[in-house]
Amino acid sequence: MNVRRQVGPAVAIIVCLVALVVLGLSQNSLRADGAGESESTAQAKKVNDVSLEGLTYERVKNPAGTVVRDDSGKLIAHLTDTARTAVLTGPKRTLEEPRNTDARVVTNKYVRVLPKPFKKGAQEEDWFQEWFAEAVNDRSPDALEIGTQYFQGAESKYDENGLRYAGDADFGPLKDDGSGLRDVGGDFNDYLEITVSHPDKEHDPPEQRDANSLDCSGFLRIVYGYRLGYPMFGKNETKGDGLQRTVNGMYKYAPGVTLVKDKGSPPPISVTKKFLPGDVLFFDTHPAEDGLEHSAIYLGVDSQGKHRFMSSRDAVNGPTMGDVMGPSIIDGHGLFANNWRAAHRL
Image (cartoon, rainbow, N blue to C red; front, side, top):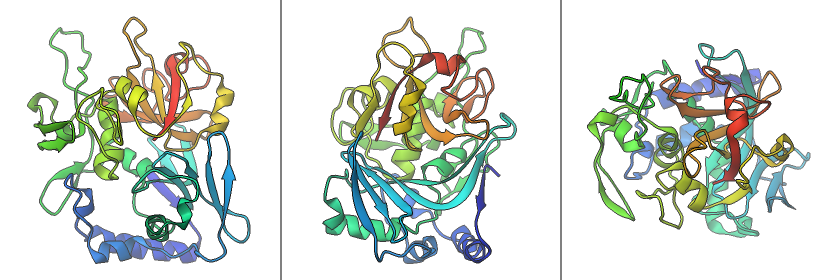
């Protein structure tokens, strides 16, 4: 198992019951066409361990946003202006990948996607109230747990139509030059082997050579886009409410808020004080090339006290939070720490 939950006895019983129900449900909500979920799915996701009564909304800065607290002062949610990713508090769970690292990340944070960007005062609007009432007690897989569903050895998952939407993913096919390295190019629809349409690219068929493959930006797009409903574009230079196809396209044009700008060298680790799980990290792992070319999902501080991320990488041929050919951390002077450049909240 890549994810372990740590909950009290009463909540654990409820969560187990929820899991039994969810196992038999359809995966309509995961389809690329955005089909709605069944009533039973919505009921199964609700644990009702957080009351909506007595909540307070407090404005924060750097970046601007709103935090939600219950009547005891406990943090319930963190919402960021112009961003669609929201971080909510729930039962503790452990993110791990034992075959590739001894480090673990224990977190009570759940990363969800809002139906539209948050803004000051949005908590008074009907769309937010409807979403929040569902999301605050949602224990279905979030962005962090979904990411682990593509790790090496992850169990395959299928929707009601037999489409495999999760399971061990490759990074890409081997290059033809005999180097042993792998090509980039696997987007979410290549992994899924389906044809999709985008606002800026009406017909995007899968590339047979990239079947079952997710490059680093394709990994972000299957997690945030296909699985959680964040809009996507088919090209790189399109501006608007959607994720671009490439890393550099996302860095330049993705909606949300930039937390750290690329200045050509690793930022000081102190900037992580503004980070939340689910933020996107950008790297310049090939300095001889123009632009940024690696992306990752920030997980938080691991069991070794390091700032850990997950990304799809050549070294392990797919998504990982592990340490093969360079630890998945931005601390110190390792491969990724030396080449970390920027951070963004979608």
